[in-house]
Length: 123
Image 1: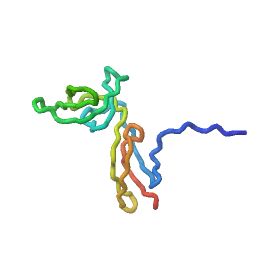
Image 2: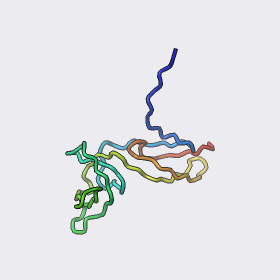
Image 3: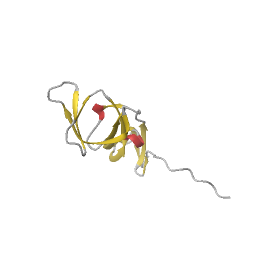
Image 4: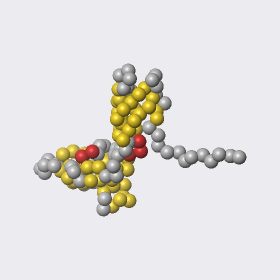
């Protein structure tokens, strides 16, 4: 009798310890976007946009200029405008909740969630 395997799924367990995360909501404000993030606008959910850079609009308070990969003109959005994150890669440093040792790790916030607590492999 063979046992069926479960399909693989993102797992915040790291080889270096255990990471507790909270999932990201389906939409986030545009102000949460960083360079290299991939997102979609609510009115075009199937069109993935890759962010080359983000900066405040020089003349309009509360607005952002988003430089998109492959697009010559920047996109202007309100900083509170909801967008659908598709990938939000981040490099984070977390302190172990037991010993305080810092560990740097890379993770995608969309796949793994936002890091909240870390316990290193020694505990």
